[in-house]
Length: 59
Image (tube, rainbow, N blue to C red):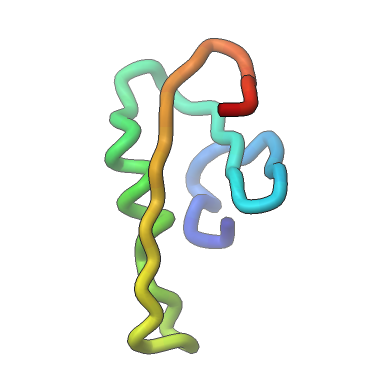
């Protein structure tokens, strides 16, 4: 979540981040940020999925 500091993180549920952003922001832009390995945990493999919606819904 710290890596998403340039976006409006309006909530999180367990392992989900709820981000409000401009309509033209690609889901891959957000998931790419979420997949970055933290400096303090080299070798950690991360993968993120995402979807766009106008209101929050549990998938």
